Length: 176
Image (tube, rainbow, N blue to C red; front, top):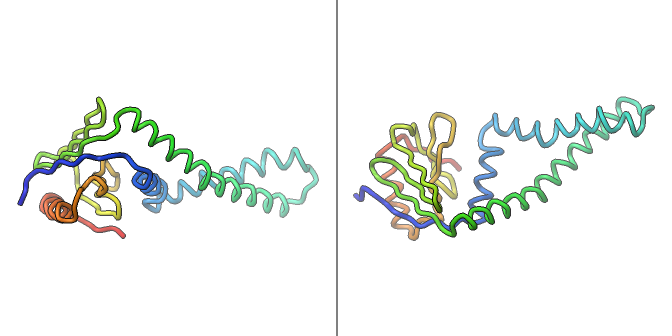
């Protein structure tokens, strides 16, 4: 079995979107935070600041309804428009820094090089590994420290070898 791997990674929209999705919805706590920020908070602001000024005699039931509608519309707008803009912004920025990066996986840990930035993660700081559809997440408890994107791996054989290697290092879990 190999004891080191080296992959060239080119940032792409699918990986960026998958990372954003995991950051927003990857756990129950993250999902609750996302719902609060995208729906509850805008509804509250609209219901307490805008509606009383626009229609001071509106009954409470209608105020709550319109506030919920406003929160829902904000969430839809954010989910489609702002998310697409953010993915493009992140990709543009990553490509300006350096077109491609390098991912090195060895018995010492994982090293990512992108432009002038190098991030090293030792296996001693990683408690487990989660395999998702697009990446292997390197976890410290419930917190993701880094990732190894599968799009950087050139063949199914190397992917299988890397998976076997990772399974020997830390507790390993496949997540749907």
